Length: 353
Image 1 (cartoon, rainbow, N blue to C red):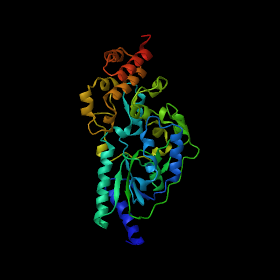
Image 2 (cartoon, rainbow, N blue to C red):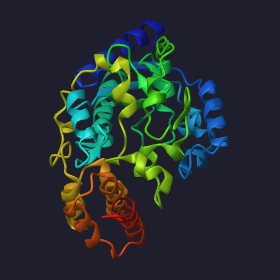
Image 3 (tube, rainbow, N blue to C red):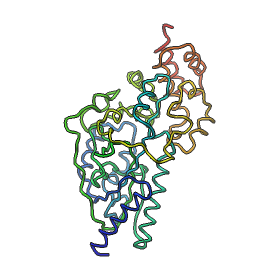
Image 4 (cartoon, rainbow, N blue to C red):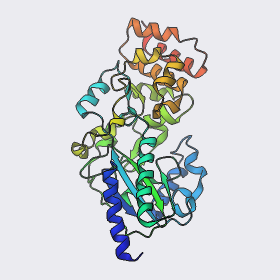
């Protein structure tokens, strides 16, 4: 194929992507040297905490050709997932008896949704050009997806480290296709955060220690999802009712006034997870948890971490006889991890009750 043919193919790829439900498709080269330096500095300061996978793949994360030999271009896509209005989200977050779950995890596991669409996109390309080298990724391999998306023109990395699109905010998932096709690249996005520091100020645990610097060890998403062990006592009161992830920095971002509700049925809340009550969630057996979370991103944290997180939220809720009762019922739980956080909740809220 000549240059003109690859240009035409790039347009077709973007058209097919939108037909498959992606809101935007961009193409980048594989030069991520600036992002590599940022990642290296972040790791050196230990901000990754126990996320050892951020380090163990070496340069594969920032040098795509090491992850998939022959890669010349990266097709980057985004898909909106916002399932409800921000007013509704705030209502859940401000109700201390509601179990707040980050809105990306309310529906079907996004890994599966996007990966299937990316495979379909790759097949369309294959039908057009014949066999070609590619590999699709959705947050499942050492890939600097936000840096790639920024280079592909999908948005800019904000001060909270999330990608922001000028016309759509930040409530979207990212996916990539690494390919050996020498497609024309798109213009990288420019930053439009300006002097705004709303995300730094709103962070409940002050995990955004400086613009573009997140100390994951303080981040509620890390604490409730990635951290396997005991959550530091000093941070527990700051977690509030957030039992899986945190959306505060997105909720406060002024660019999200342009965000649109997702049309994807797969991202609609399952089992009323957007209004789940803490006491109800705490009463689930392990079997119920595994059944209700089947096909959900939440399932991967496991039952004991689920109870650990809810115990903290119950300790932060307005004290009541009912909450004290359900905590006491699990004070002798088989899991030492669960017992530790149940005992804390009882001490924190009920030592004088």
